Image (tube, rainbow, N blue to C red):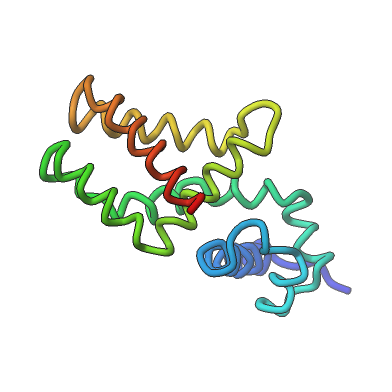
Length: 153
């Protein structure tokens, strides 16, 4: 069998990643599996695991993409009050909640905070600090706590 081109490999990886995003947002990270991804993409489980040997590898590969999906629901242009209001409203959005579940899953499921979760939290704090100043950290902590309680209901 001839070796696949780099372009074919990239297309395969993007196909897998598109399915991963779709399944994280619809099924949730816990219900996503190599089997569900294989069924959606038509790529064998072995083919998927060749590119992503561990399930955590999906989160690492999706870091920026997931962060963008998360932040697009937030009002970053109308001060801290607008940010807080938009976050609370976004808690009613299933895709926003799915990204929060993914973040919390990676914080809680690892002995050491997973790089994906650590990076996501650091980016949120950095974004708030940059846009809203020093006191925004306390608001972000409150929002994360409120979100965790909301997801537990």
